[in-house]
Length: 489
Image 1 (tube, one colour):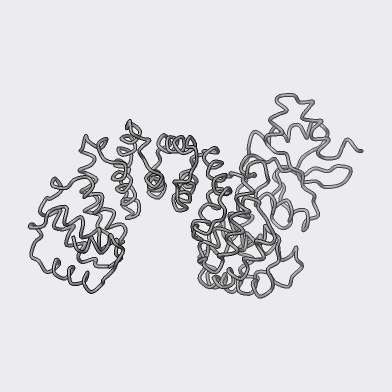
Image 2 (image 1 turned 30 degrees about the vertical axis):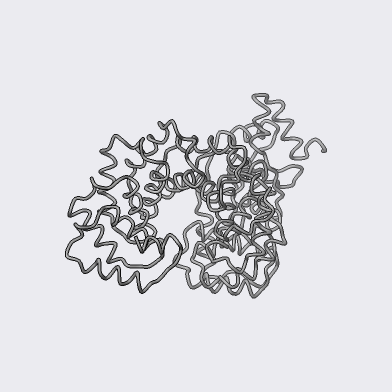
């Protein structure tokens, strides 16, 4: 109880905590401890951030070997799991025992919301995979008549845990989304909860546009984002970009806050933030130029994915960050040249093409450039019925489209046609090419570089405009003639 009091009062006294740990670890067995006392003890050490893995292991072993599980109340088990996960002490056997007990229980509907959310959070944080347990808890939540009693933090922890553990449960996510969007306001949600929720939905690939709009509107209505951490800002931007949810005001507000906090960003957060803005097509030049100092200070700490994401983001933004920045980036890439994925190499190749656009003397060294080019041209195009329909209509108006045309620099156009002796690229663009109804970063970069470097103007056939034409071939042909400027000839 004493260590609990210290932790509860947010007062740490490491020497005292160490003596308590030494005493408990030295005991031959812990049978004289009440379950609640063991729970409180490890909770207090985790809360006070006093690292004693040997103490945690002693407690876990005692509970397993002395078969104390039946003596614990749900809250006690929840506290122990939370403590192990928070203290980053790996004890898979203990977690597995708890999972078995919960799977055999018929009383999960009686568990308090906080208990369920903490248990899921702990399993996900500890990296212990238990899909059957997650499914059973989800079913208990969905079957509960008291879902309105789940506080914002509980909802946040639950969806975060499912996404982190890579356990899919669309019904649960949709229920959580419905609970949130029906609230009068989101004032009860702290910045961490908001960040975790949208991150979880994006990671789990559950589309809930109304939820994303509700969260974005709430964040935009705040006076400022001072309470948001750099990681929180980065995760929110990443979630909206990944989910292809367009919200320019939100990205603008995040950009303003990020510029003010840029000295606090680590390499992962800054790379994700820049990638998110670029991917969403939110290309405010002031934001990208203002973040350059933060990138330069973190460049040596970037892993291969961070480097390629940053390079690609600046290529999309078309904001020249200076020779010094480029030199640091190239040197860092050379050190990690064997670590890049195919996607990373493609991003670096597009960054190299951007150097051509800028007519700079920079660019990738020959050996790395060859590797990047080979990766870039190796990607297999994805064909669609939408493309087939457009190509058929192009043929019907007398144009013979060259399908999947590869340009000298390696870009692959959906089709190349000649109009009045002039080559024009035709891109048939489905939902993947957009953020909302605006071109995403990949679309912007490809069309710009093909036009600037290959001398081939590119026209776009957005999927929704084509869909609106229905099955009317005459309208489709008129649409293409107008798009290609044939009506002016």
